[in-house]
Image (cartoon, rainbow, N blue to C red):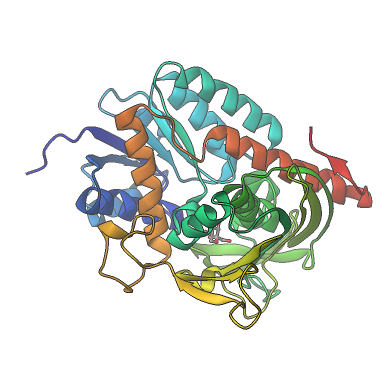
Length: 388
Ligand code: SOE
């Protein structure tokens, strides 16, 4: 028998992100102090959404997101659809008094993100919470690195070197999925994966970018239209269409803490699958991380004598590390999906406590402004674009 949980969630979308969020919501109450359940899943294809509801044991499904927003039995809405729908759904849900967890990037344009954030701040004043899904913040190793930096173990930050490397569209005949369409996704690699590392640099150091100079490129300008799609895989159908987003984006930046930063986001790094690599160099030491080895990072303590110094491998798998005490014994490690469980835990705890969660919509808006500046800089090789 199901009891009536404290937090009843409507999941909007059931593809890759919907699926991983569904798993996160189901796992969170079993491992953490969270009392929540997905009560309703929404998707446009009735047969498919019904099957999803069955598979994930979700009591109800609907084909129109407005049903979730207007449903008095729903407390929170979890938006897992492409960016072109984020603003409309989020704005309506917050106006209806529903807490909102919104996938990243927050919106498809900075203007949309501004409006969403303004409405979220208004809702927050009435106890309605909102959060943007920069899921990698839930990676324990990043939490440990963040603490080392906050404790001053790196000293003054000089460099942030961040790359997000994937290779799932290297094949020129990979189809024109929604992530390669500006109308759906807003931008290409830049917003889809670059957004994560922009947020990560901020999460780790607390420093924001004050300006950027960028280059973007679309290497493959036409691709076959999609016949069918699931998660990131897809099969090609008849005809071809134009790729109107960036395939790759690179940019340099300054931070408000006086550091120099470099960023690279690409889906053309053959052999790199989900290589989110971030290295931070400070006056007293460095840290380096690669998501392909998410349970560990490297730390160099520059205050040690040279015969002891050097990069050491730290395993972020111990009970005292963020989130770990809820999981497995020492050294057993976590995976990609756990970061989403931690995300919904943060969101649910914020709703229960009334203390606003992070990353906030303000954080999402900051990232969106950087994405916007990168696009303006890259357009016509415009050079330096300051962030206000
Ligand atoms: C595809 O590039 C993707 O699924 C992103 O959309 C996600 O945000 C990232 O977590 C993994 O890669």
